[in-house]
Image (cartoon, rainbow, N blue to C red; front, top):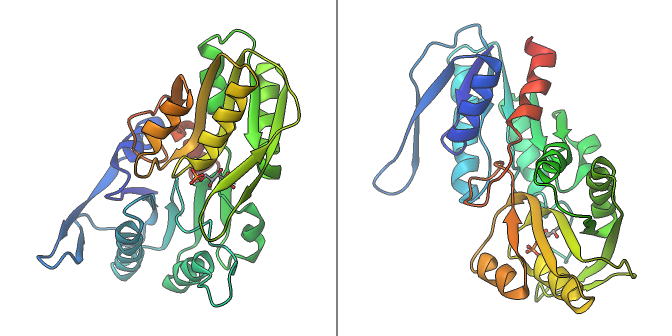
Length: 291
Ligand code: R5P
């Protein structure tokens, strides 16, 4: 198996290659003067099974085009098969037509990946797990809760409660809380499809220290509402944790202003709040197939 470090995910690609003790093929990447993407693979991949490591975090559209170019070029250069590790998959929050006439962007993305000849996609905490059965190319959805909980455990928080949001969040909170041996709950949330404004409600769960877990922090709107609610309930320490830290615009400022003591994120998306890595769970999965 040959590992290819996509331009968007160099750091995590190095971590995975270290764990697997596998060489990493680097890609020459640049932009043409008009901003179009240029990709060049500088090593022969003829008859090789290739795994690309390339996340689709912002700037998503550039990283997606690079992914298309990588898959197509590797197969064109004679690779036997190409799989993709995309720690963060883009457009997963547009998995259905919420308003008449909208593009179902994630389905379009999956169709193109399949048409290009991609054999499999590995990702972490996909936002819309229900779409996996519909994907024309198999998707392996790895769970970041284990390394997140292990990281929290190492930091010996006193007796936190774990709070999340939504039905999927309940599952996430449960996984983290069970590893920590603490209580958990999930808030109900509603987002205005036009303004993006989020409202949250939570049945009572008292405590002093809260670990708020969410799969994604994007604009920070959901996290901010949860933090404000927990502050009103008397929580003294609040940790805003997530798998994918997109932290768009002034999300960081808003989260701290709302009363968070710390933001804790994984390395699926390069960001300055990374405290734990998902390279281990990705490597374990790759080992199952490639030894
Ligand atoms: C919602 O279903 C997700 O779990 C996240 O809460 C949401 O995507 C976060 O987005 P934002 O940070 O923009 O509120």
